[in-house]
Image (cartoon, rainbow, N blue to C red; front, side, top):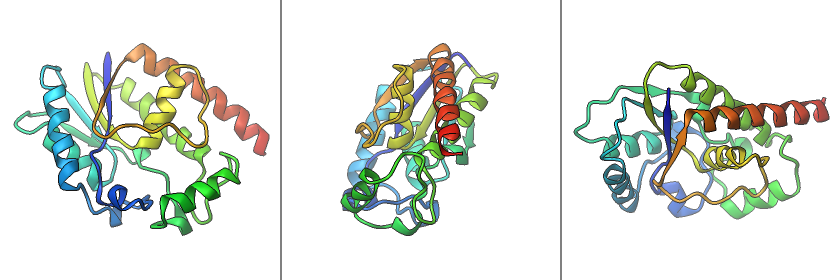
Length: 199
Protein backbone atom coordinates (compact mmCIF):
# COMPACT_ATOMS: atom_id res chain seq x y z
CA UNK A 1 0.00 0.00 0.00
CA UNK A 2 1.37 3.39 -1.01
CA UNK A 3 -1.51 5.78 -0.39
CA UNK A 4 -4.61 5.90 1.79
CA UNK A 5 -7.59 8.22 1.46
CA UNK A 6 -9.54 8.36 4.71
CA UNK A 7 -13.05 9.76 4.92
CA UNK A 8 -15.79 9.97 7.49
CA UNK A 9 -19.20 8.72 6.37
CA UNK A 10 -21.89 11.17 5.26
CA UNK A 11 -24.39 12.55 7.74
CA UNK A 12 -26.27 9.67 9.35
CA UNK A 13 -29.77 9.60 10.78
CA UNK A 14 -28.31 9.27 14.28
CA UNK A 15 -25.92 12.18 13.72
CA UNK A 16 -28.79 14.38 12.57
CA UNK A 17 -30.74 13.36 15.67
CA UNK A 18 -27.63 14.02 17.83
CA UNK A 19 -27.65 10.60 19.45
CA UNK A 20 -24.77 8.16 19.85
CA UNK A 21 -24.72 4.96 17.80
CA UNK A 22 -21.96 2.41 18.31
CA UNK A 23 -23.93 -0.68 17.29
CA UNK A 24 -23.96 -1.45 13.55
CA UNK A 25 -27.16 -3.47 13.96
CA UNK A 26 -29.14 -0.34 14.83
CA UNK A 27 -27.50 2.05 12.34
CA UNK A 28 -30.24 3.69 10.23
CA UNK A 29 -27.92 4.76 7.43
CA UNK A 30 -27.56 8.14 5.75
CA UNK A 31 -29.88 11.10 5.62
CA UNK A 32 -30.62 12.68 2.24
CA UNK A 33 -27.98 15.29 3.07
CA UNK A 34 -25.57 12.47 3.86
CA UNK A 35 -26.19 10.95 0.45
CA UNK A 36 -25.43 14.31 -1.19
CA UNK A 37 -22.20 14.47 0.79
CA UNK A 38 -21.27 10.97 -0.36
CA UNK A 39 -21.84 11.97 -3.98
CA UNK A 40 -19.57 14.98 -3.48
CA UNK A 41 -16.93 12.68 -2.00
CA UNK A 42 -17.19 10.62 -5.17
CA UNK A 43 -16.55 13.73 -7.26
CA UNK A 44 -13.63 14.75 -5.04
CA UNK A 45 -11.88 11.40 -5.53
CA UNK A 46 -12.97 10.74 -9.10
CA UNK A 47 -9.42 11.13 -10.44
CA UNK A 48 -7.84 8.97 -7.73
CA UNK A 49 -6.65 5.49 -8.82
CA UNK A 50 -8.43 3.65 -5.99
CA UNK A 51 -8.00 -0.12 -6.13
CA UNK A 52 -9.40 -1.07 -2.69
CA UNK A 53 -12.18 0.18 -0.44
CA UNK A 54 -12.20 -0.58 3.30
CA UNK A 55 -15.24 0.16 5.45
CA UNK A 56 -16.47 -0.53 8.96
CA UNK A 57 -19.41 -2.82 9.72
CA UNK A 58 -21.79 0.14 9.89
CA UNK A 59 -24.36 0.74 7.14
CA UNK A 60 -23.53 4.46 7.13
CA UNK A 61 -19.93 3.86 6.07
CA UNK A 62 -20.89 1.24 3.51
CA UNK A 63 -23.61 3.39 2.00
CA UNK A 64 -21.21 6.33 1.78
CA UNK A 65 -18.59 4.23 -0.01
CA UNK A 66 -21.14 2.66 -2.35
CA UNK A 67 -22.40 6.07 -3.45
CA UNK A 68 -18.92 7.59 -3.70
CA UNK A 69 -17.61 4.72 -5.82
CA UNK A 70 -20.71 4.32 -7.96
CA UNK A 71 -19.86 2.91 -11.42
CA UNK A 72 -16.31 2.09 -10.30
CA UNK A 73 -15.30 -1.56 -9.94
CA UNK A 74 -13.38 -1.50 -6.67
CA UNK A 75 -13.09 -4.55 -4.36
CA UNK A 76 -14.29 -4.13 -0.80
CA UNK A 77 -13.10 -5.21 2.63
CA UNK A 78 -15.24 -4.87 5.76
CA UNK A 79 -13.06 -4.41 8.84
CA UNK A 80 -14.68 -4.41 12.28
CA UNK A 81 -11.56 -2.80 13.73
CA UNK A 82 -12.74 0.40 12.00
CA UNK A 83 -16.05 0.39 13.88
CA UNK A 84 -17.18 3.35 15.94
CA UNK A 85 -16.87 3.39 19.73
CA UNK A 86 -19.12 0.87 21.48
CA UNK A 87 -21.24 2.98 23.80
CA UNK A 88 -22.69 0.12 25.84
CA UNK A 89 -25.25 1.46 28.28
CA UNK A 90 -24.97 4.90 26.66
CA UNK A 91 -26.03 3.56 23.26
CA UNK A 92 -28.71 5.82 21.82
CA UNK A 93 -28.30 8.63 24.35
CA UNK A 94 -27.87 12.27 23.34
CA UNK A 95 -24.39 13.46 22.46
CA UNK A 96 -24.29 15.91 25.35
CA UNK A 97 -24.93 13.13 27.87
CA UNK A 98 -22.05 11.09 26.44
CA UNK A 99 -19.74 14.11 26.43
CA UNK A 100 -20.59 14.82 30.06
CA UNK A 101 -19.63 11.24 30.95
CA UNK A 102 -16.42 11.50 28.92
CA UNK A 103 -15.34 14.71 30.64
CA UNK A 104 -15.43 12.91 33.98
CA UNK A 105 -13.47 9.82 32.90
CA UNK A 106 -10.04 9.07 31.45
CA UNK A 107 -9.52 7.78 27.93
CA UNK A 108 -8.61 4.40 29.46
CA UNK A 109 -11.97 4.03 31.26
CA UNK A 110 -14.48 1.83 29.38
CA UNK A 111 -18.01 3.08 29.03
CA UNK A 112 -20.43 1.01 31.13
CA UNK A 113 -20.95 -2.12 29.05
CA UNK A 114 -18.90 -0.58 26.23
CA UNK A 115 -15.26 0.12 25.46
CA UNK A 116 -12.62 2.74 26.18
CA UNK A 117 -11.02 5.26 23.88
CA UNK A 118 -7.72 3.44 24.45
CA UNK A 119 -9.28 0.25 23.09
CA UNK A 120 -10.57 2.09 20.00
CA UNK A 121 -7.10 3.49 19.34
CA UNK A 122 -5.73 -0.04 19.53
CA UNK A 123 -8.28 -1.23 16.97
CA UNK A 124 -7.35 1.67 14.72
CA UNK A 125 -3.68 0.67 14.81
CA UNK A 126 -4.53 -2.93 13.97
CA UNK A 127 -6.67 -1.83 11.02
CA UNK A 128 -4.02 0.53 9.64
CA UNK A 129 -1.22 -1.99 10.03
CA UNK A 130 -3.25 -4.65 8.21
CA UNK A 131 -4.04 -2.20 5.43
CA UNK A 132 -0.42 -1.14 5.00
CA UNK A 133 0.57 -4.79 4.52
CA UNK A 134 -1.80 -5.25 1.56
CA UNK A 135 -0.50 -5.33 -2.04
CA UNK A 136 -2.89 -2.70 -3.45
CA UNK A 137 -1.52 0.77 -4.15
CA UNK A 138 -4.32 3.14 -3.10
CA UNK A 139 -7.21 2.53 -0.71
CA UNK A 140 -10.30 4.49 0.23
CA UNK A 141 -11.12 3.98 3.93
CA UNK A 142 -14.56 5.09 5.09
CA UNK A 143 -14.83 5.07 8.85
CA UNK A 144 -15.96 7.21 11.80
CA UNK A 145 -15.20 10.63 13.24
CA UNK A 146 -13.44 9.38 16.38
CA UNK A 147 -11.05 7.09 14.53
CA UNK A 148 -10.15 9.72 11.95
CA UNK A 149 -9.59 12.31 14.69
CA UNK A 150 -7.22 9.93 16.49
CA UNK A 151 -5.42 9.09 13.24
CA UNK A 152 -4.95 12.71 12.22
CA UNK A 153 -3.72 13.62 15.69
CA UNK A 154 -1.20 10.78 15.48
CA UNK A 155 -0.05 11.93 12.02
CA UNK A 156 0.86 15.21 13.75
CA UNK A 157 2.41 13.22 16.63
CA UNK A 158 -0.31 14.26 19.06
CA UNK A 159 -2.05 11.91 21.45
CA UNK A 160 -5.80 11.28 21.38
CA UNK A 161 -7.72 13.88 23.35
CA UNK A 162 -11.13 14.34 24.93
CA UNK A 163 -13.20 15.78 23.41
CA UNK A 164 -11.85 14.66 20.07
CA UNK A 165 -11.60 17.00 17.09
CA UNK A 166 -14.65 17.42 14.88
CA UNK A 167 -14.23 15.81 11.47
CA UNK A 168 -16.40 16.97 8.54
CA UNK A 169 -18.68 14.51 6.80
CA UNK A 170 -17.43 12.75 3.67
CA UNK A 171 -14.24 14.82 3.36
CA UNK A 172 -11.15 13.02 2.02
CA UNK A 173 -7.87 13.08 3.95
CA UNK A 174 -5.04 11.98 1.67
CA UNK A 175 -2.15 10.27 3.45
CA UNK A 176 0.98 8.48 2.31
CA UNK A 177 1.76 5.01 3.60
CA UNK A 178 4.73 6.48 5.47
CA UNK A 179 2.49 8.97 7.27
CA UNK A 180 0.07 6.25 8.30
CA UNK A 181 2.89 3.93 9.37
CA UNK A 182 4.48 6.62 11.55
CA UNK A 183 1.06 7.50 13.00
CA UNK A 184 0.40 3.87 13.93
CA UNK A 185 3.84 3.61 15.52
CA UNK A 186 3.21 6.78 17.52
CA UNK A 187 -0.18 5.49 18.66
CA UNK A 188 1.34 2.15 19.68
CA UNK A 189 3.73 4.03 21.94
CA UNK A 190 0.87 6.02 23.45
CA UNK A 191 -1.10 2.81 23.97
CA UNK A 192 1.82 1.11 25.72
CA UNK A 193 2.08 3.98 28.16
CA UNK A 194 -1.64 4.16 28.83
CA UNK A 195 -1.94 0.40 29.25
CA UNK A 196 0.93 0.47 31.73
CA UNK A 197 -0.69 3.35 33.61
CA UNK A 198 -3.91 1.37 34.06
CA UNK A 199 -2.36 -2.04 34.90
